Amino acid sequence: MNSYDFFIGDNLNPEWVGVKIRNFASKLSEGKGSLSGTQLRAFYNEFLRIRDITADISEKVILIKLLAAKITYRRTAKASDIPEDMVDFVTQLVNQIGSSEKRFKQACYLMEAFVGFFPRNK
Image 1 (cartoon, rainbow, N blue to C red):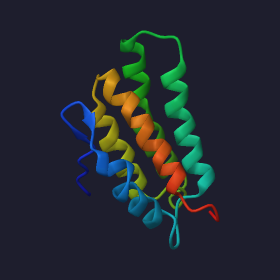
Image 2: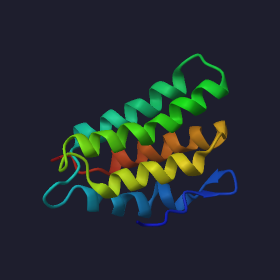
Image 3: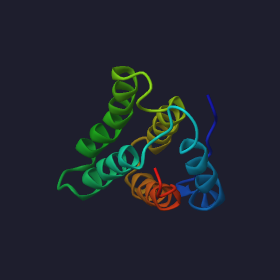
């Protein structure tokens, strides 16, 4: 399990919208059992859906926490479908967001950078 430092206080660590997410996207796009662009975009869309729904913060916190459960389920439903590193990434991101709406909004920027740096050929 890797340790990710997504936030500095309540702010997104700027390295995560640059070199760190670029390297991570490259790593997850390579080799057997790699992440597909379609899988990544599906999770990005989940983040955006939660961000954009009309709900109070307590309901959004529940939906955010469910993201970790969803990716774990997808990983166990088809053993090679989602790379373990992606499960770890999303789980730690969700844990670091906690109940902070500000952190969640910034996590959406991180996911946008992830999609942007993910190789198109996947």
